[in-house]
Image (cartoon, rainbow, N blue to C red):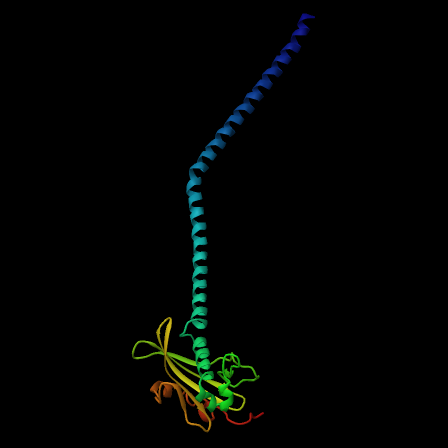
Length: 237
């Protein structure tokens, strides 16, 4: 009986040693894996600052470039709009200013067929309004038609502008021509402004009878097939 009882104890003891060995193996493997993980994490931590710095620097550079490009485009757009609409030397400002001067000129209004009574009544309460356009209109209201303008740098080093457009009353059409010099961004000088109406001598609102070589070069006085570039008479279908 005693000899039989010893064997189970040996089996139990052997199994215990096996379990302990397995635990030790698992523990050793776990420690090894932890050490490898720590080593890998340590390497990543060493590399991370440089990578993060480069990443942040790249993002900042790209964002800054986009912002600078957007600001540049916005500034150019604002400058172009301001110089065209609000600057005295802009084509639109010059056009509107000269048209207003013609509407306030008694001599110009007489050439365009207005009577003395109508001109006397021309005031802020009953203002005479002319149609003004840069080409023959296809409709009745054509105040905003584009005008013909040429800019060049003169011998004086300043920017000159030649402009030609039409003004129309209820009975007559006139051709307006002018030359302006841009003194600076906010100041413009009109050298001359002339008005030609068929059957009447040329009238100068500003300046005198001077025909420059530049006008001849660009052929501003005779831009069309008719007198002063205007096809007088009824339109042909």
